[in-house]
Length: 285
Image 1 (cartoon, rainbow, N blue to C red):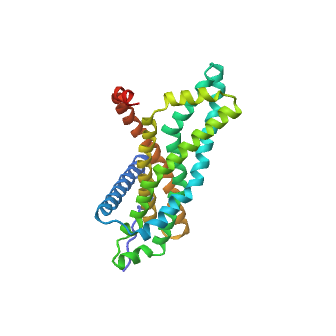
Image 2 (image 1 turned 60 degrees about the vertical axis):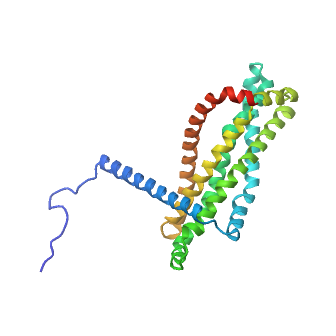
Image 3 (image 1 turned 60 degrees about the horizontal axis):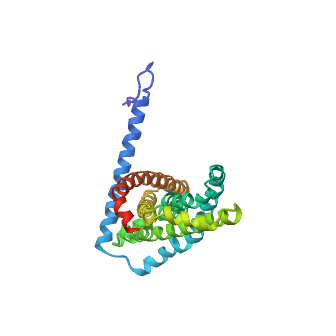
């Protein structure tokens, strides 16, 4: 018996996917991906409150994410302050405001550039590494082996990395802030000739403790986003070396987008709260 061929009839052009249909497919895939990340995040947070990981598992991950990132963050923070000093000095000196350079540099570092660029560096170093490591474990079926042995892979693999990013990235942000302030001060006072007393006086006058707190507050969300997105991409890596590389790349790109989005949303809300608390803050400082 002859089997009828399935396809377009003879003389009829094959169906073409319209741009609207293709756009709808991309939107649908994006919504599904966001829902999958949300479900993955909910499971991770649930395990944190159910059971704390052992210190033998936490300490090596804390060392890899925190201690080994100190040099990268310190160098990044130093050059942030140095570049700001060089770029802003000419404009400020033309307006006769060179002595106020410290306030602009330091408030930019502690509120925005320090937390964002430190998180970006960590997304490239830590996030890509976590995604590649977990992606390799997925490809080599080590994650499936953990499940077969009765160990929940999210509890054993994701929770320690999430806690490390959540707790250590704020400390690394403070390191980036400190090195940025020092780098900007050295270039401004020793190279560009700004008066040291006026530089620190204006810094103390305009940079407040709430500005430092705002940058550290953002970094908690940045660290959580980096950990969840990177681990999710590693868990969903496709087979082969190409799949692992794609997971590492997507971890950095999506983490960077999340950092910028969270920075915008948190900054918008923080400005509203800060303006309402301004009289109380003035009385405390």
